[in-house]
Amino acid sequence: MALALALFVAGPSSAAFAQDALQPYQLVRSLQLIQDRIAGGDHAALPMQAKLLEMIDARMRNADAEDFKEPKNFRALLVYGMSGGNPVTVAAAASRAITDPQSLAIAKGVVAYLSGRPAEAIEMLKPIDPMGVPADLGAFLALVKGSLLATDDPAAALNLLDEARLLSPGTLVEEAALRRSVGIAAAQGDAARFALASTQYVASYLYSPYASQFADAFVSGVITLHMAISQDKIADITSMMDPEREKVIYLRIARRAAIDGMTELSAFASAKAELGRNGNGSRDDPRTQLYSSLSIMTSANVDEVRAKLGKIDRGKLSQSDRDLLDAAQAVAGEVMAPVKAPANAEAAPTIVARGDGAKSATEASADPASADLPPVEGAMPEQAAVAVSDPPVAPSDQEKDTPPAASPPPVPQPARTSAENLAAAPAPTGTAPVVKASAPATPDMQDPIDAAVTSTRRQLDQIDQLLGAAPK
Image (cartoon, rainbow, N blue to C red; front, top):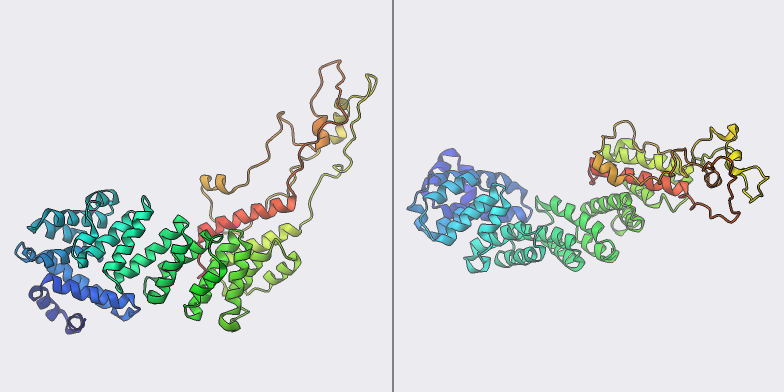
C-alpha cells in the first residue's frame, strides 16, 4: 500500500521508472491492496486504482519471456486480467510466455471472459479446479467461474463463490462473491442463503462503491422471496445499516411492492420508511406518502387516498415518481367514476315460452328502437394512466400486459345483454323459435371497478419497467 501511494504521489517520472524496475507481481500485489481498501469503503483509493491499472498495463505490454519464467509474474498477469485488466494486453503477454499448459488455458479463458465470449471462457476454465492452484490465483478463478455459471448451473456457481470467499477473505474478491451470491440465491428461491449472504455483505461491505449493486439485488430478492422471507428477517438485516441507507432500501421495497400489488409488503416497507429508526423518521417525505397510498388503494377509503395523493408535493418527486403519482390518481379517479350502462339495460325483456300464435322473440329483438343500443362490455372504457409523455410499449409487451378481452359472440353483431343474446339468432322463415324460460344466463361480467383497477395496475407495471424501479 505504501509503495502504491508513493508511486501515485511521485508523479509521471517515478511511475515510468517503477514500470521498468518493479516486477509484475509486485505491481499487481499493490493493486490488490488498493482494491481491498476500496471494498472496505475507502473511496479515496479509487484514483490510485486507476493509476495502478495504467502502470501495470504498460509493464505487462513490455514484459518478455524472461519475465514470465517467474511463475509469480505469470499468475500476476492472470490476476491483473481478472481484476479489470485489458484483454488485449493479457493476450499479447501470454503469447510471449513459456509456461505450463494449464496456465496458458487459464489465460485463454480469461481473455475470452474479458472479451465477452462466456461460452468459450467456461469451456476453457471448466476443467480447472480453483482449489488446486495457488490461492492468489484460485480466488479470482473461482469468482470468474461462479459468475459464468450463474445462469446455467446456479448451484455450482454458489459453491464456486463460496470457494472464492474461502481463498480470499476480507478482500474485493469476497465482496464481489457475496454480492453475486445474493442475486443467485434469490433467483433460486433460496431464502435462507439469500438472508445469510445479505447479512454478511451488510456487516462487512456496506460502504463499498459497489454496494449500490447489492442494494439492487437485495430489493429484487425481497420482492421475489416475499412469501418465504419474514418481515422480521428483513428488519434484522436493514437494522445493520445506517438510518439513511435503511430508509432508502425501504422506500425502494415499498415502491416495487406497491407496483406489483403486494399490499402487505408495501405497507410494511412504507411504514418503516415513514417512521424511521426508533420512530424518528420524516412523516412528510412525499415518497413515503405516495408508496403508502399505493399499498392501501384497493383496501382503504378511496376518497381518503385521493385526498392524500392530492397533498403530495410533486416538486420533491423524481420524474418517474411524478408519473407514478399521475397513474395513482388516475386509478383512484376510475374507481370513483360511476359505471356507465345503457339506459334500457335494466328493462331487459323477460322471455317466456309461448305457443305458435305468440309474437316471436326474433320479432321483438328486431324493434328499431333497440337496434342502436351500444355494446355492453361489463367494464368502463380504459383511460390513460399516465400524463402526456408515457413512452410507447413494444407489441410483445402490450400482449403480455393487456388483460384478455372478452370472447366475441359467434355472430358478427355488437355485444348484447344476456337477454338480448337469447333473442339474437334469427329463425328460419315461417318457423317460430322456441326459447325455454329456464335457459341458462350468460356468465356474469367481471366487476367493472375490479377490471379498472386491474387494468390500471398493469399500466403501472409498464411505467415501472420503462422508467426504472428505483426512486432517485
